Length: 269
Image (cartoon, rainbow, N blue to C red):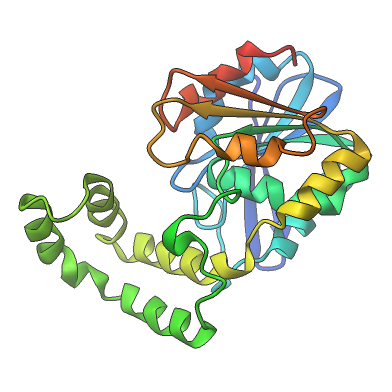
């Protein structure tokens, strides 16, 4: 991001401090969420593509980057209220949304709330449409989530076992890298714990999302990486089914990061 045009804004949300980077000189408002483990810097390659049409507000997720978050969890309502604060601050009545990975999940959860105000939705390898394995945690009893969340506090003690299993090819490389990075420090462990506890109540209501897109005729574009090993390529088909007139799927020859949003060059914004 060009520091000469970057503006840093902190939004007070109760005790929480929501860090945003604002860029571009366009007349339309775009609110963007990076994915889990990324910060506002993720979108640096995309900003030149957005600058003429949009003024883009990129938000650091809870416990990411420079956003401070003291609550033990977050909810869909929290994200709705943060977006409303941005709308109040900017004076915009309508806006567009951009989200990568978990940030895509964040965008999807907000569509039913803001449907009439949404101009365009841009999704980069969005999480939340398909929830493999433990990503669908709403079926897990709250008491069990709290108990296992407590285990995370001391999970660094398992790292020697993680390495042992990986060395013998009994543990997938992706799981190994995640454990070695996110369980090593107390701050990262707290981040993992908070997202584990929050995810059950942060599920995408897909029928409501589809109805909103259809009823308000919101142009929606999904970008998916052909080499993505995290988000399955069929999520685009699942979302598009039944609302084909408003949803466009684009597959590109990249992995999960989708070149920091540089793939947006493939469409006419």
